[in-house]
Image 1 (cartoon, rainbow, N blue to C red):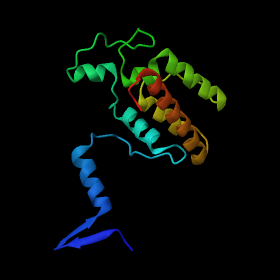
Image 2: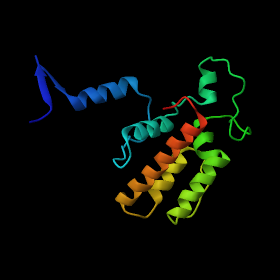
Image 3: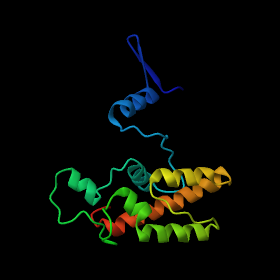
Length: 154
């Protein structure tokens, strides 16, 4: 049976409700969110928050008006703690990505933004199933990086 209800002369579907919520409540993101089924939902949600820059980094906390001692990265103390820095530019993130690249036998490239990572992933000449696995490995590495950097994240 289709997922549709009809009220009066209006048609309701789960897909139309999702589109309405996405269009009115969610920030614009250039690419659709695709969940990776080989990792848990909380890891997928976390990766989505990396994508839309909605994690409690020091710069995001400061922008919300909270008074904090410093907005510098606690790991390197060399740059502002932003999503881009924590997951792509910080020496720890680069070391982890270098290890992942070596593990999967791909050339290492330095990334600065989520978009760089996404383009890198799209340009890999491998099967879509293999890409899903690599994507899942990256998502899990981001999850553990967050747990190490932000002690309040579950």
